[in-house]
Amino acid sequence: MSLPIQDALINLEARGKDAREVFVELFAQAKVNFVLQAEIQRPVYLTLREMPFLKALQLLCEATNTRYSVRDGVYYITPVAGAPSSPPITVQETRAPTLRLVGTGMPLRSVAAEIAKQAGVKVEVAPDAPNLRFNLNLPNVTVENALDALCEGTGLRWERIEGGYRIAVVAPPQTRHAPSSGGQTPAAPRSAPVSPRTAPSRAVSPDQPLRCPKCRYELKTDWRYCPICGAFVKHLTDRAKQTSERKPK
Image (cartoon, rainbow, N blue to C red; front, side):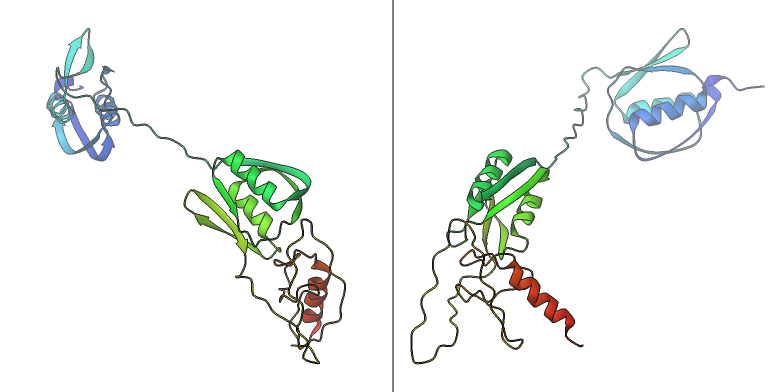
């Protein structure tokens, strides 16, 4: 013999659970029909052990500023008159803007301007950075991934600044001259050209640092361009890397 609805024993455990879910669990245990007419979006904390249904319902209504009524065997849950309603919870999904950078022979400063235009952020290029040219095929890329692609192997780096980004050389430019004989003063490095030019091959002693044949700036083996004069040096850095790998360890 089943107990009357009002005598049905309820067990509820809520530790910050949404009030709507607690109401659903309550009526499911009592096996009665209900309609929730209140927009309740608040956490509920309660523990009810072997509590009669009607008493449990009253306690839950008090905790949520609601009241109940019964019509044709259906329980209606409505807000108490004058009780402040909970504002809806709005979740905004933030996604990094994506760019389309596709072109051949695109100068660095033109690429930076295009990134700024598409992403709506500031993108600066340091005055001493060479205006390298790029063949790009990046149809769907984020701002920072695009900057990584520009700086990889070029002796450039990017950094965050207020309101956007800045592209600069890896280290502050330093004039480095090759040893000269006869007391002659070596020529100063030439300014960066608009487009990169291939540096001539030149033998390098294994004990000497790899330098750009044009401006004598010390190079790293993963660079494709000299960050000072813009010369294309990948053929030299690749050769130096292969020589280093062949050395006995």
